[in-house]
Image (cartoon, rainbow over all chains, first blue to last red; front, side, top):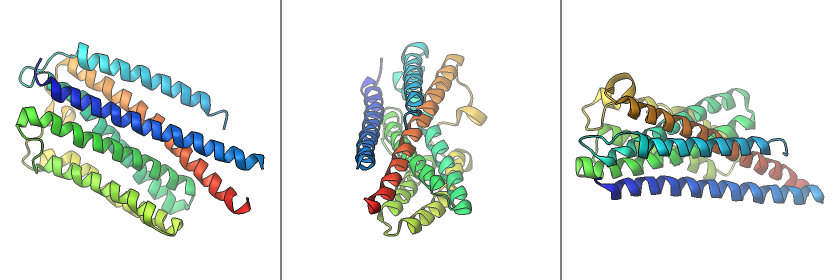
Length: 42
Length: 224
């Protein structure tokens, strides 16, 4: 096994970036759906 | 609103399974490359990231053309959603590339044509997103962004062809020129491409849904 630190860094950064992006999208969807429901209930 | 949720769930499960399969193949199925060693395994997610970025910018380009022709906001929303995902994946290419280059080339970055054109691509679409955010009139901003999205796409073939057009350190493309991959490596790459394509579709649907909800809210706000 050679240069495992670079391999580990690359894969960690890929999954961290994708996870944060997905988290941001999921939070936005739920916030917007809540707001929309509030408007519709009025 | 309710009918779309099973589709998200299905896509999320499919994406998870495909990514798991691609990871298994990248680490346990594909053989270790003789000269580069294990660091070469970055390639199995670096190339699919580049592919998704190209695909995302292609969708942005087509949706921008459709928006300019029809004026329908849905096309503009699709273009913006896809560009945002494209920027994420080009960023991943620009991060994983140097992490591969350091042990192989001994430097993180060199002003090689492939690397430079990729950085230019990233800058073009970051600017595209900024144009959208900072223009006061949204309608005008959408038109500006559409033109930018179409012209910006011209850099994609330049990035792809840079290996053939100029002298470069970057490895040759696997398909249509480079070749030389062991069958197990080729299958692993294909698994990565499939997994990332499905991931792109999932992210695009989610991102498009956000922009649709935002538009609905904007339409409701003045009357509320």
